Image 1: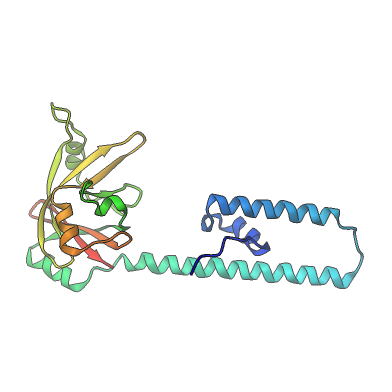
Image 2: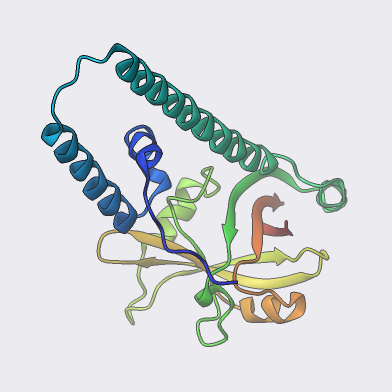
Length: 223
């Protein structure tokens, strides 16, 4: 079934003022165009002193305000549910970490896999700083990742990745400096993890970190 094109209504005008993040730029432009037309139409109409008509218009606006606020509350509740899901690590993972004498367990991020995250040629899982929920690297590790080799290559930090079935994959963590920001990437053996778990675009993964002795480990939970 094909998706209907976005057609803004008066309710969208109200919602866009309170929660513009629920619309993309093109939709916001359409809403603004509708808003301008509505203003022009109201200005062109002759003034009426009909009390009943004024009352009906006021009631409609109040109904639209209530409907808009209810929609925002409903969406907000859904967002809160998603965030709370990220705070609970399944018991099988907790038990495995305990068996390894692991400690310092932290929730790093929940991510929807992109094309580059599952592409063999890229062979890396990006960890954007804006998506991380905690500081999981020590100051010394951060400093090491900022250094560059004499050859110009980036410093690699040896880590371990446990997939959703608790299979162990040796991997490497690298920091790539971009034009305006920097980003961490899990690189070595990442595509082996993708193949072993048949990860696809839009799969949702939780990434957790913990330590065994002092070694940094990552754990993947598919949700």
